[in-house]
Length: 433
Image (cartoon, rainbow, N blue to C red; front, top):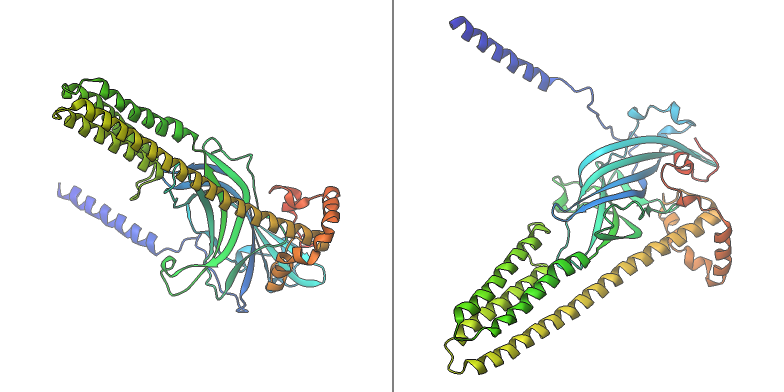
């Protein structure tokens, strides 16, 4: 018996030693990132294409997406290299781009390319990423179900802003595919993709360093039909049925109250249905307010039923009460109708402005490409300003000629990720490495 106990103790000791050894052993998969030996600050250009936008989970406040991301940066340390096979990419400097708001990553395929520019022996490195992931997105639900949401994929570099900055590749358009959207039964996806570079705030970093961020934002608007017809309209019918209590004589308060309270309990059940469609939030949505107002109206009806039984002239009290309650219903729905109109109009105006901003930028990029045949631009502020201000430089008198050129020209920039254009990139469409 004692021998068995000693063996068990020795076994436990061996297991503990193995665990200690495992913790002290350096993993073969561990990657150490080195700073740049030249100490230069690198501008990394980003281009995004959302190949497929998956389900949008309002309760979890998450969405999934299949994304193609490309990053370009000039690398003087690879000067003289002409083929990507000549480079040991594991030993090279990396911009360390991470998905800042990703909850989980299902797959991530990364590839590197070298791009040679005519007249410049410093190559451009392109890092292509095909990513399928789920992202966290805090949703604003004050206007639910008349709301629209901004779905943002946020990129961050693990290098501070003193070493890396993000910028948009002004030579090629960011794109999003609407035809592959799987949540079209509940949401309307807009065809624009807005991208913006900025830096982390004080609340986003645990150190004194600030880090570059890059937001890729798509807009979706909820289709309100399901909630209007299956919740709001049913609540309206239940509330309207409360007036049937006036058909019961006022000297029978028990029968009157049974009708009103039964309908009130039905409204409570519908309130739970609404709650299951939303995350746990500390504020009322527009639909919550409507359901609660319907329930308050039914409570007022119950109070009226009780008071009618003790009134000396119950018939007159019923007539006055019915007129007042009907006026409350009419006025409340008029206010809600006006409020809904204002909300929808404001949403459409904001999304229309976003559409215009995206289309204006795409038009500028197309003009720049026709002029230069360049698909990589934005390494300097001058390059960015040249493209953003190209519509002013071109002039209104050239618009007719541009439309004719667009009808004749082949638009290679609209190719989907995975095409020959994407797999063999170049800055001038002449040199592919």
